[in-house]
Length: 402
Image (cartoon, rainbow, N blue to C red; front, side, top):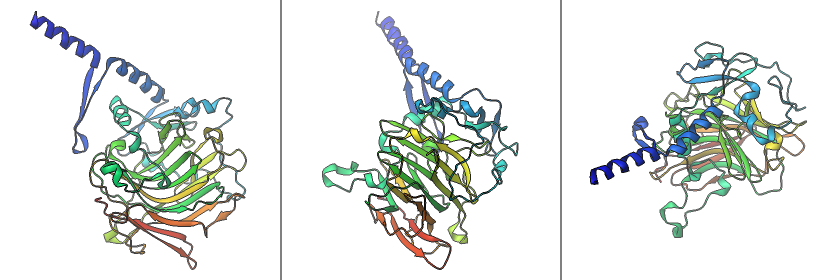
């Protein structure tokens, strides 16, 4: 009877928990039991994310992407997309923007086929069950945020007061309305431990909603320690999304540039060589959509529909570094060294601008400040160059270990 009872117990455990996934990547082991009903739910989610593709292509790093019909990408499943009139050839309309040919800079070099996806489709990374488990392991504290929401080291909160640290240039608490912002970011590869991330990003706050774009080293998200192009969408009420793999994310318009790709080449401090990328978040002057521009020629990558957010304008903007430390000492930011105000030796962001209420470019911005929540680990220095075409420059970084 005892043996039979044990067998029944084991059977029930197998039925309830299904199976266990174990990963030995990134020098740490993940093990998570999946209840049977959650396993079925996960299969449904995979079908929604891994939409039927015209073809499967791979990047030069061997990562698989599905070439999905423009209108079938995950972001079109969001409720705000009802009665949409979007087209994959559309481009932002802003009268301050210089006329230029579209697609004049290709990203075919990212792909094994040298081209990317067919016209009319967009590359969406294929997601596995292990990926979903990893994504679901993100707690709210792991998700990106703005420096305005940080909590100072309050001894009443013990050692868990805040896992995020910042070194940023940010707008002050003025009643300004922003319709865009830009930056030129020096690409670095800070060292992080498993479970951590270190990002250099542009952040636009729209009430309780926000968008972040930039470079991040995030082993939990990408399974490696390369700096990667990312966009993060946060919609008040619990919806958030990295890149374009869920319905709250950005709508892609390019067939050759997905979010999440490695940013190469990387700046090497010892060689005194800086490699940079240009980022812009620009609100369309006609229909209010928020566009992501990327690369030295400001290519339009995709957009967020205007009615995706609760507020139609940005009320806060910041540029700089954000790290998440989990339970270990905090990771590096930038080059892992405190800044010296030297573009050949520091991680930096130049060409810091905003589009003001009237869609005018403001590069002087008297209403900005430098902020670091803990100068023992991270510091930031600001400078305005009136003699060079650099505008506001932010030098940031630090070894962490706090």
